[in-house]
Length: 406
Image 1: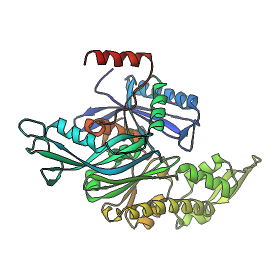
Image 2: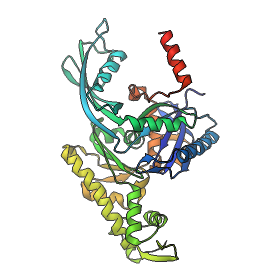
Image 3: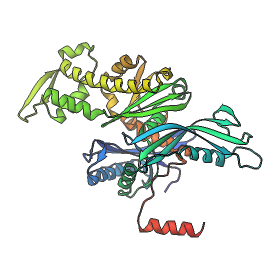
Image 4: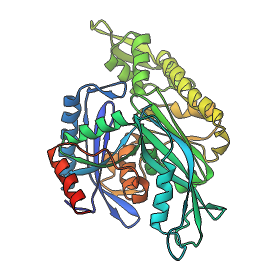
């Protein structure tokens, strides 16, 4: 396998995406991608392993054919309410004889940031360094090479349900792919769509997926808060189907052609043909009627996020505004609802800063998978995020051999 290639696998609630890329200087070159849809998940939980693995194999085949690289080892991400995070701090002595901070010291103090008491079914998934202090001097971004006696780290630690993390790893293993590391979907999306200036000035990222929306607040290039709201594209579709008495396919179609912006003049004259829920024939509904449904659910989504941000006293850190991404962020007019709720300029964003085969992965639905490539290119981002080890005969043999030669 080409060790320079980075491979990302994003298993969502309705589709699987695989992206292959290689670092090229400070840039990332996209070599290929693959996508396949499935119906093997319900409310963010895998309900049919066979369907999801089948879709994954299809996406892998497409990515391999396009990139010319084998998909054998990959990075992945987990989202939903099974992931949560909190800020922590930890200290450690500088063990270097010269008193100079080295990589081992940084690794040790960040590791200690994860050593807090959590339920037995929860495990640390990722650590995002925020700031360091050396002998009481705070505000350091990177103390590597500095001289001191005690190093303190302030970090944001992301935790995940062990069961869900293991299930995600098991699913990918079923496609004969090893999981190298795992992070939060919203963190990966941040890597794909946010600029350093946005992270510096402060912004709110909202990744709207099929089942839920994950949010993160950044300020001074540090992660201040993260959370999940159980409202995603599926809820918009279900609302439309219920109110307009149409099928799920009809609701999904309306969601793609009608704007959620009630001030869109064209809504008054727009007619949309949809199947009747009985399955007998079709009917025509007015665009404004559908827009009201989309508006109400969009307003609820953003209001719940705003309420949580205010509870955490983070609303003052949004100097660069709000960024929407994820497949369901493409619902027309959502950004205007967000602007009203947050009173901040809002944009919809897809992956940027990549080269190569970028056209197939340019839309917001590819932000997590492309962001994983950038995240994977920075080893410190997943230093403590080794995915659960695969079980089985060969793995036990490797562990025995490793122990024999330690």
